[in-house]
Amino acid sequence: MMKPVLGILLGDAAGIGPELVAKLLAAGKFEEHCRPVVIGDARVLARGMAVAGVSRPVAAIDAVSRAAWGAAVPFLDLKNVDPDKVAVGRVDEASGKATGDTLVTALRLTEQGALDGFVYAPLNKAALQRGGYGFEDELRLFAHYLGWDGPCGEMNYLRGLWTARVTSHIPLEAVCASLSVAGIVGVVKLADRTLRRAGVDRPRVAVAAVNPHAGESGLCGRQEIEVIAPAVQAARAEGIDALGPYPSDVVFINAFKGQYDAVITMFHDQGQIAMKLMGFQAGVTVAAGLPYAITTPVHGTAFDIAGRGVADTGALAAAVALAARMAAVDKSR
Image (cartoon, rainbow, N blue to C red; front, side, top):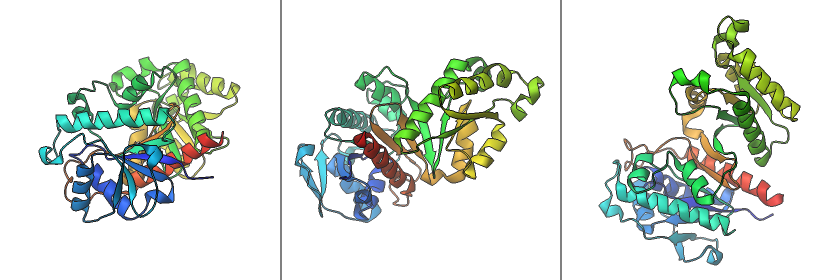
């Protein structure tokens, strides 16, 4: 089977994205997993190459159908932002608009079947919003432009382990009141489907408790008894290998040993702290639930080191490898 065609987006022009893409292009790393088509502004990539101190020829194309893969990498030049007018390391409205425009372009190309999926280098949400894309995050942008009303959510992947969360960007005091059997089952089902798309035949999904020591049999909270355990049983009744609830300080120890393929957490930092300690520079964020393979590094634009050429490419490389794997499974169905 031929490798999938993936769009490679440069991310925010003021951040580390362009230099990350430049480094991986120069090393030929994208071709190990896919047939890459770089999408963005050629001037931004040129600046990224200069920052990284690398070079790789690109071949300008006006349609993905005209892409040819060889010494030169196909480049769909949108000519949508002048890097000379974008200061490195700062939130920039023009760069945010170009980032949003590029994401929408990649979505449309994927919908049309020209791309099998895409990977975007880090973007900045504040710049995206100032540029006219007033969404909470890029996942909502994707759902909006795809007209997607099915289940979707952010998942993270790192060295064989996946995480998903039931609640996300809300205060801790609101977490317990936001938990429901249906909500937890929905996230477990989303994780199960996403892992199967990534080639895991029967995912082992561990579900974390929300209270210390999993509630101490009701002495330290009843959410485990009244909400989380019933959700685990409901998911198992649907044929999913769901397990738990487990105390969150224990579940990740066993997950890191390979006992589970995914961990479902009840709130944001419950999983994010564990995963980032495991390896911040290799994590991937997946737009789970959407009909296409879409990934990005788990880290952000790193404005503090942008323009210095020192950014680590590990997470972007991992994002490409995972998107290629998911796209290949999608094509085989």
